[in-house]
Length: 246
Image 1 (cartoon, rainbow, N blue to C red):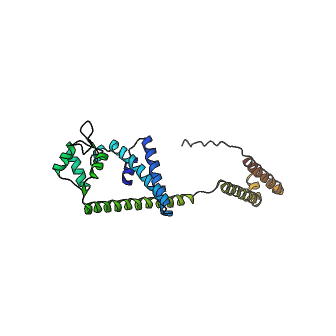
Image 2: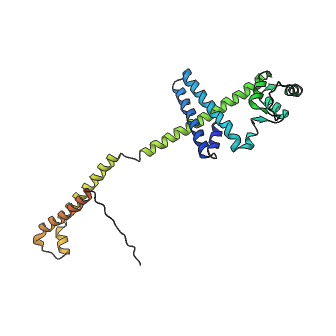
Image 3: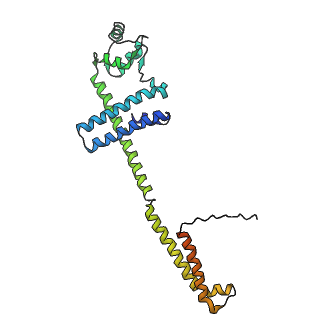
């Protein structure tokens, strides 16, 4: 079932994808609920969800994969293919008996001479069945479903682990603002500290009066503070970068 879901999701249109994904997620959620609490109610919900998904698959599969759907058709046009289908399901019916039942109305036939799968299975209830063969088929189906569930659960675990890894890369906006403010404050303190340490170097570079270095340092610090105040006020700056023509 789940393999068909994944295959269909890759090709269906937007509307069908929403329907299919919703039913698929419902099955997964109900399955998890039943695993957490194996109550009769949770089992009914899980069975109902699976039935809804299966009905959706039965409707969409022939539309998008008509060739594959032919292997498990909704409609049987010929007696031979209908009988072969029943034999494959483990029912015992000879070619002669089936032909008589088909022609005598024991098998419900449509006006165009075809037989629906639901009607064929209803007729099959009157037949004897190869219990061993059916049991083997059911065991294979059970194992297949369990394998699909295990694969799906592994994908869920992988997705959750991936999400947790991604979460580690994110921080709250409030924390980000605090970090940014701390960095800006550290930068301002560092610039002010360097202005005091390098005041004589700056004065010498511009040919100033060393005797007035303290005044120069204070003026420089005031300029730095004013720049940071403008940033704190939330002003926006536009920066244009000119490329070197050389």
